[in-house]
Length: 311
Image (cartoon, rainbow, N blue to C red; front, top):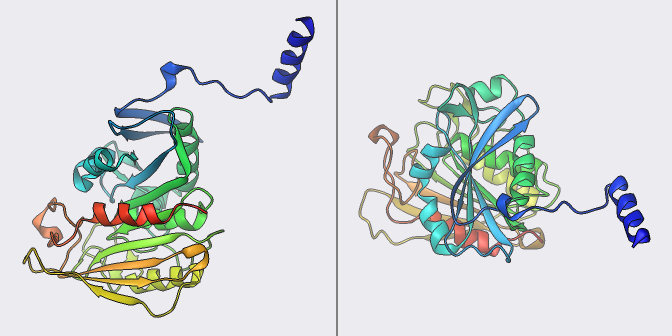
């Protein structure tokens, strides 16, 4: 027994004992608020754990980033991802950006947006530490961590695919192009990008939008081609047209660039007539343009994510 105590003491001194998380620290089904300090900043994020969650099984995670001027709570309503989470059984994490006002927040995605960009907030490091923190409280599958986001949040998901490719398996930006000129993933990261051709806030062809950020956005084509190259995909896409079932003034074209490294794909869901909205959801404001009902972004992105775990 004395020998056992000595061995435990030595192991503890060397830092080789595993961290034991007590049951009280573990998250169960429902909605949870988590707080994390990164550098000098206190950051918050929300976690939705579906009813069918089993703490004994590694569970996929979808990280959802709000648009500029939004917050985690607004992203829950805007995206409708909790419903898909409950149906499919994945965890959703809603990060909050930073800002001078508590509810009007942004992420630093490169060339956008606002407070976070101007103050050079390291949202990549925040996300890295967030995932470490979440892993202490939930049984997450490290090979099935995905990112999506609206507008500024979509830009953020592109940045994570480039700079945190060791943690992010695939991304699904909505209405947000790349915020950088190039991308540099350490491994292939599959992309499915949703964008309306009539988006006036993050214009499909690039340039300055109507939003308050004053950002000179990269084009959707720039974003797609950068990732086609990075993932080693075929240069010519397979084009598919979706049936116009909603008759809502929008039409959907899917362009798939396949045969990339490790099976990577880059997919553009081009929404003809669509605005700065989340496909399948009601728009927050009419000024944002039409939101197509011909497809559900949540259904399509989850179908895509299931095909592209980290290899």
